[in-house]
Image (cartoon, rainbow, N blue to C red; front, top):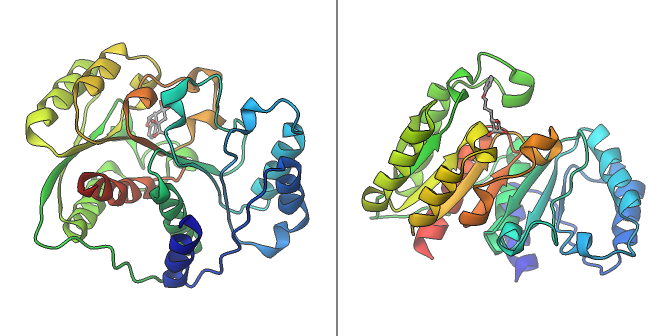
Length: 280
Ligand code: CA2
């Protein structure tokens, strides 16, 4: 099922798919290390690797690091939201540095979004048939503190697009996917809480980049929890690869899925995922 759907999407992009499965993590390390010249990107689902004590995680991380140096996109995917079940039993890879995205909680669509992200990175042409017709649903995209600085500071982390560019891009993708996008930014925690509450009555779904409040705000956790609509946590960077204080999220346990580390293209990808969440 995952293999067939992944292959079909790859064909649309003209990407050749090499889909492999093993229970032996050591083997994954070997594939990554030995064959890194032969692929342009990697999607890896390490399942419950952090629960296993016998697998050589160090080798695996070293292998990931090798391909990060080659500047090839690597995306960790999980079918379920791994933060729904206690973050200490299953943790995302936390390798320092490198170019690694993270998508979890969308079922099969976690894989398809990762393929789309790699397609975008490789700038390959594709025909996306995944359109919704005769349907317009309101979706909130809520952005937290300092994201108004996008494109003006730290482009090496957050890219060159401004928040206004992103809002425009999201509106375009929204039109394609039958979503009426309400794009907002605030530096104030309480305002984010107000908007998450407002969305209960007004929006079919919320995509939230709570920025620094992700790591500090019980109020935002509670507000999201009270909103029964589909919810996606979004980050431009991958907080798990950054400072220790970014590695805990109050948002992760109360959302359906998470998209991180895919740069500003994560916004468009999240909208695609949201359309599918609303339809499902
Ligand atoms: O990667 C993300 O999207 C973050 O949510 C961004 C937050 C950070 O606190 C999170 O850990 C991860 C920071 C947003 C600050 O945005 C800036 C944009 C340009 C220049 C300076 C800050």
